[in-house]
Amino acid sequence: MEGILAWFESIKADFILNFITKDRWLLLAKGLGNTLLMTVYALLIGVVIGIVIAVIRSTWDLNSSRMKNPVGKFIFSILNKIAVIYTTVLRGTPMVIQLLILYYVVFAWSSEGLLVASLSFGLNSGAYVAEIFRGGIMSIDKGQFEAGNSLGFNYIQTMWYIIAPQMFKNVLPTLANEFIVLLKETSIAGYATVNDLTYAGNRIRGVTYSPFMPLIAVALIYLGLVMILTHFVGKLERRLRQSDNR
Amino acid sequence: MITVKNLQKSFNNLHVLRGIDQHIGKGDKVVLIGPSGSGKTTFLRCLNLLEVPTGGSICFHGQEITDAKCDINKVRMQMGMVFQQFNLFPHLTIMDNITLGPRKLLGVSKADAEEQAMKLLARVGLQEKARNYPRQLSGGQQQRIAIVRALAMNPEVMLFDEPTSALDPEMVGEVLDVMKQLAEDGMTMVVVTHEMGFAREVADHVIFMDEGVIVEQGPPEQIFGNPQQQRTRDFLRKVLK
Image (cartoon, rainbow over all chains, first blue to last red; front, side, top):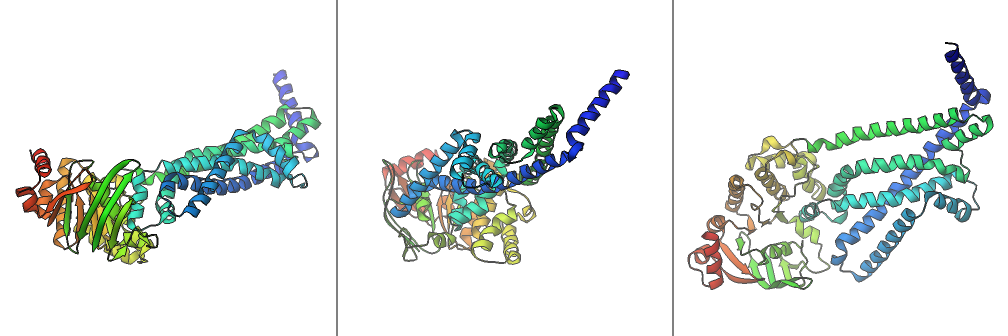
């Protein structure tokens, strides 16, 4: 009994030391805010880049043999090459290295660590999102394009009204997975001196010399965020599956 | 209405269409028959440029549709197409499948498009399915909806690409009945089919194709009753047993 009480007391002291003293919890709160901010920025950048690249690459794959205008075809072939190189490089090098290059080389003049890190995560995520969307577009039956075309829809209208809604439903689980990876990936933002959640936890550990509390707290916060995200994606997915009901 | 001159189509080194000349007039019911690989489906798909011809010309109301200046989407709005695999949009209800084209392409209001859709659905006896999704329907029902979807655009001509080939035998009749009704209403139709009974009954012009050319054509009485070419006779003997 004595032992348990003593253990409980030490936990309590540890908790107070790491979170209450000098309002250290504020550091975590600020870090959490930055983590969320970077995730949202990166997500937006990633989705935009992903869509652009996926449309370029699938348009090329599906239609290059039918393009009649030689100038248009040449421009598209260049765009397609750029897109291929982009995905190859961004998926083929470590995220940390990309972040360091962007922060210390490309934007060496800038002290906006958070924005640079967001951009870096977005650029990286875009390469993965592009492949997810491209796979989604290519997996749609060719008959769907033809049915849209035969009614008189042009390529963009067919994509928008017919292909995209089906594709989005198909790729949603994979896309959600990518967003979860992205959220956790932002934990390396400290390399660009961003005070994110991980960095905050680590700083508390550095001053209190008591690693257990801050690190477990950080882990639990990430876990909670991922679970919330998963929950909402599941809800959305069920709604999108309505047309599958028999 | 449609005039085809010396139509050629190659896929890489495979020469599928080797010079087709054909005129399709308003109200014609043209049925294309022939063995698989004869090019009849490719010919049909060239008519609305789902396949781009490698040679020759196709004129629709005097307009050269293979010309780069021609807005093919405008032409396609006037040509309905029904596919072997139905190709309904699985993410949309039956109602939305039918009204998507008229609303987005013809600028018809939602209320008007739905009213017209209900009339068309009544013609094929599927009004009660308006709020269902394609997957909830049988193959025969889906194909009848596909016909309605094409009709909702008020096309001048309807192209049918083996519309009953993917159906269970007991559902073939219901689709053919809709097509017969359409023919009676005076719709211009071009049909690729293996249903010889339908060809004999509905067609006013039957085209027998083999190896990328038209071997023989004429009224059904001639093609089925007194074929002139040996290849036609061989083919009909096989399919009619």
